[in-house]
Image 1 (spheres, rainbow, N blue to C red):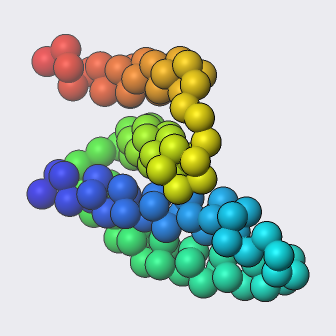
Image 2 (cartoon, one colour):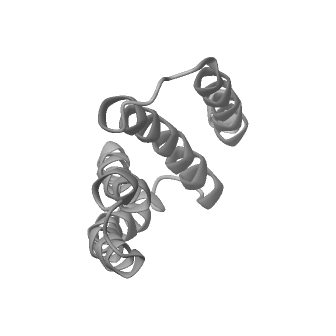
Amino acid sequence: MKLFPILLLVFSNVFMTYAWYGHLKDMRARPILAAIVFSWGIAFFEYCLQVPANRMGSAYFTLPQLKVIQEIIAMVVFAGFCFFYMREEITWDYFWATLCLAGAAFFMFRHRLML
């Protein structure tokens, strides 16, 4: 059951990423207010997944661990969103940022790894 909260966070981040950045492609010609309302509508579904994910995840992970897990997922989802949806180039900077997040994960989980 430890993986279920992580899976919910993955789907939550898909909604979050689209709510934050999808309007740059899909709503560019619309008024800013329309983009805001559109993004809020998408963000509702993000919260419907994120809140239960964090509640369930808190039974298995500490708060800092949950935050690092979320940031790693956000980076991976964002890179996929940039490449596949926005047609952006993935640069070495994504690799270096991911490496830094892997370091953060190591420090958040190292007490469990050392047992």
